[in-house]
Image (cartoon, rainbow, N blue to C red):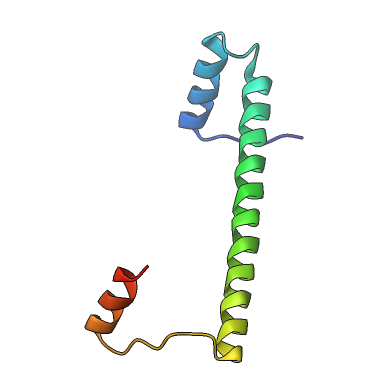
Length: 82
């Protein structure tokens, strides 16, 4: 597999490899891809949790299990009671 990097990314990879933290540029790129994969997995998990929370909220509204707050004083009182 071949890919191109911008000059600044190429310089970054070279610097990280030269730092001694990695043996070569390939290790730097592999680590970057592992981190990207982890970030994407965490983003997906957050989205799944958000969708589940939205479904729970929708279900609560459908059951009539909600509090209707029409004005700022109502909102302030609600949060003061939490």
